[in-house]
Length: 360
Ligand SMILES: Nc1ncnc2c1ncn2[C@@H]1O[C@H](COP(=O)(O)OP(=O)(O)OP(=O)(O)O)[C@@H](O)[C@H]1O
Ligand SMILES: [Mg+2]
Picture 1 (cartoon, rainbow, N blue to C red):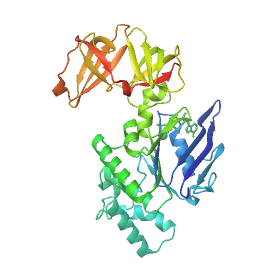
Picture 2: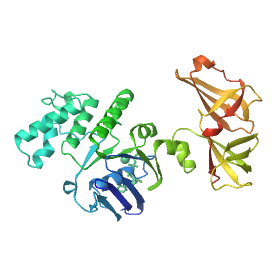
Picture 3: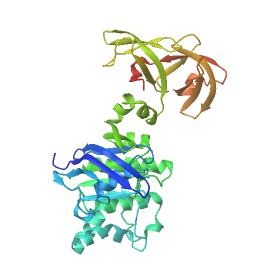
Picture 4: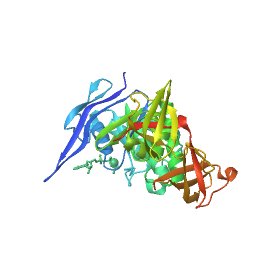
């Protein structure tokens, strides 16, 4: 596709004095024109390094980068049509907001009238009209980040790169700015590669998420797919919260699979491809995908050892007979009643929400 960004077998090795670090390991990724793809993973997994290679700030050890079918792997930053929004804003403190945004256009030798028009249009787009005369340090953090976004947008790049752009904002502003970026990205149809270690942020902002671990892209999918059908234990655990139960496939019938849980009852779940009777499996159960019922009802039972009330939700830890802890989240605790530690409960698992993994 015309404006598509493609990473092929992209690899970056840093050679230190005593050791070498494989920061990015044969990453393959396609960002379709007009879509937003997020690299999501824990600290040190290679997200920034990948983004820096796309921006031209780091040359790959091997592999290729294509933008709109042009090979850009070794082009310097100013010769590729990308713009980056950094966590630290990176604004010039001695210049006004207007001059900060105008900078990229001046470098590209636009005429003065054209610069004024484009800067004012873009400032209005992010809701900063009338603030062009201020120095950046007379703005709030959220406004400064919008100036940084403006500066990236104004040059009309083919790809917008974001490296943890919301990290310096407080929780409420993070959500506001996130939604603002997403709306703007969709309205303008601008191809974007976004980096974060925050799974909730990734789920909210992305068309597709690439989950990275130790330099490798381990799964690529929609927010729904990576939450409901994580490819492995690491992803199930990293994306949201997960309970893991072990068991064995007892029987497979049309569209259904009976699992005998270790030290528990049986549970009937939707059949997954690739399993046969007798296979050992690991079952992923999200904390919200259960109901707390009376003791002896449901597939599991135990005693509540920890209970928190957070307003919209009650969170419980239930200790199972084998000593394992099972996390439960109950929405609207006002209606269902808040349970105190020590209460004996049964856990009924929503079988449609269960996901089955190989035992690793
Ligand atoms: N210039 C460098 N020299 C040597 N090693 C580096 C260099 N830059 C990054 N690394 C290493 O490469 C790996 C990936 O780093 P990277 O900054 O890409 O991670 P990240 O996923 O962005 O992490 P974070 O979420 O903490 O920002 C890390 O082990 C890091 O220590
Ligand atoms: Mg980083």
